[in-house]
Amino acid sequence: MGRAYQNRKESMAKTSDMKAKLYSRYGREIYVVAKSGGVDPNGNLALRSLIDRAKKEQVPAHVIEKALDKAKGGAGEDYSAARYEGYGPGGSMAIIECLTDNPNRTFGDVRQAFTKTKSKIGTQGSVSHMFDHSAIFVFSHADEEAVLEALMEADVDVTDIENEDGKITVFAPNTDYFKAKTALLERFGEIDFDVDEIQFIPQSYTTIGEEDMAMFEKFLAMLNDLDDVQEVYHNVEM
Image (tube, rainbow, N blue to C red; front, side, top):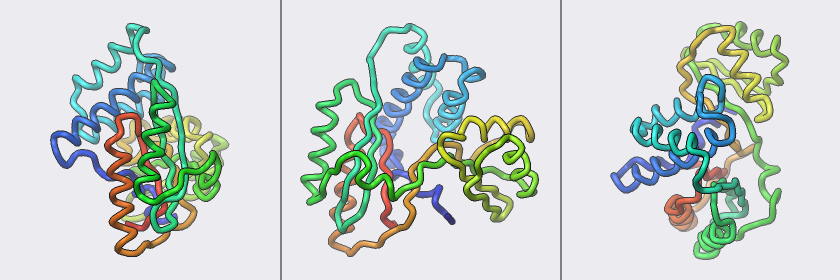
């Protein structure tokens, strides 16, 4: 799979306005995960991973604490997950994951990003079958065999493992995320993960022409401007 884990949404931290959007998205996701699984990171592995990722992206502590305090209160917005997919400029494929308190509004906003860039929003499953929904872990370690052994003993269905310049990259089905992470932590203790998340990874990448690339960048910008959009996955070789 090579550099598949690097296929992430464009950085939202280039200007102060973009940072504010990034912080808002992390705050919303932390709130939802804490509200559903508990506010203690030691007992909520998904929350622990999310907070670690937020810190790596330099999300301020007060943003994290505010989201946790809000979840402790029990009341607040009722967000639900929504996923949209379809064909972008140049025949590219995209999956958009959202957290929304108004699904009708979110669908309309996402659909507008498609229609204004000569793209086509599809039905559920229209392009996701061309992506692998994978748990991905990247961390420093010298012994690939020891890592694989720990995962196999925990009955993790490892789909791929790579070792490059002292960095181990593990790919597993998204359903094995918690089992894989627990196995790694139990065997090797605290690990400073470079990547620790679930992503949609395209099974193949595509290159698009200059004109289509300009429209594709507009497509991504429109999606990234939407507060409800959490992640955008695509198969374009940037």
